[in-house]
Length: 570
Image 1 (tube, rainbow, N blue to C red):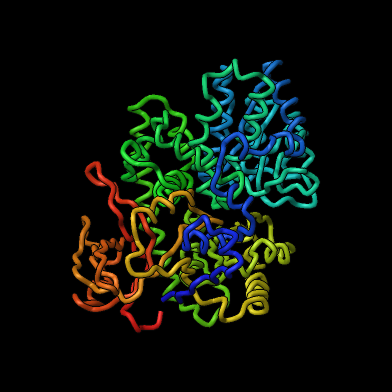
Image 2 (tube, rainbow, N blue to C red):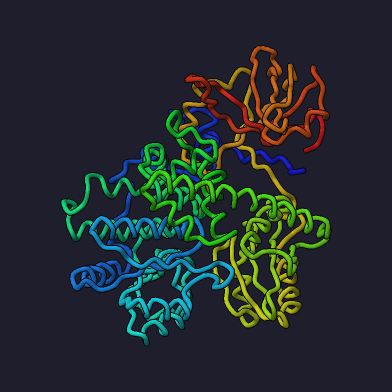
């Protein structure tokens, strides 16, 4: 059970400064680290043109544009080299759509997650060389591939890198490296996704070529892809990402891409009747795109996003849906197997098996990390090699931990809270000991208690449609700007029933402790809670406030995150 923790409340001076906002909005702004009126205005007023930074502030952008335009003019064979996750696939599609708009069909290369792994590789270089490719543009990858870029150069293939991952000391000798993490750059926002960086490159290219060469609104019609990639990669939805996602969700609701339409239909998203939310993309759209690379090959997802034929797009969407169901089943099976190993006394979870497919290990690690609040590394054994995925909590930077064990690793890369790694099997035990030692030294037991960080305790009669409208101004929600959690205490249970196809969901009706406000709640996969309470009992609930669109109407709904009988410790 997660511990319920109310976030710190702002002091009187903060409340005076932000008196134009309601109490719960003040609490949320304070929790997001917003300290000035200017920051608040920027947070709420997401103007598209003013909210995006100058693409030429990204170092090497001019070099990249110059080399790509040269390739276009000389009609050189071009290739887009992507990654197999949703961010990489959407980034590749952004760039591919740019070239198709100019009548150019680039070679698309997305490596196989299992057979090739992440990043550039020499076999791919050989393939591209046979295709007579002269320029490779990477998206969402490449910044850690100095050796591979050198190999490409020896085959007379030049490389332009666009990436958003942490930058190593030894940079590849590419024509240009566009990565917002480069320290020498002047770019004011370093948290772009791979799709976001690819979009900035397209913006610069369109600017150089002139908008008249492109269809009306071409740039903005790419934002649905950028939104999906940005949300899927869990980069903070703050700053420029907030702008890209806000407008991208609008485009997604009107998307022209047949594949995205069918994918949303398969996920049960009524995009034509209601606004598409960032949480729907995160939990329903992105996993289905990712399922292609996890269970088969990411080329299927790329084809889906780029397919204009309705019949073919539907077939591809159905295929991804099947992969996603299989992915869900395998993820649950491996999760249960690791849970049975009992890691309660460990400050880091490290587990592996020959039988676990590499493609879903990141999902398993993420679920374990979330439930047990500790760094989690899950791996598979392939011959003499160990390949795995890691997920971590904010108190433990997993990429720094891997940096300190780099002498044992064949390759690795990622972010503070998510990474992948490969090492020789003979080094596994030493690697495990080092990671566990770092976790023991860095983490306190309090860090290992899963927490629900609650933004606001609501008072009697306070929940209203106006509150929901104010909440909408805080969207889009995601990493860095989580959907606010509210606490309602001593609510009286008036009615409850199980709903849904498998009777897995709990529909609850409560009245607040004043007895004056009747509220409808839905708890997805909360069926197990039904036997723990009775009509007339008082409960404390943690929830998201949402709008339920039904039969053309809009209804206020409390979406349960946790529930307990009043007076019981969380």
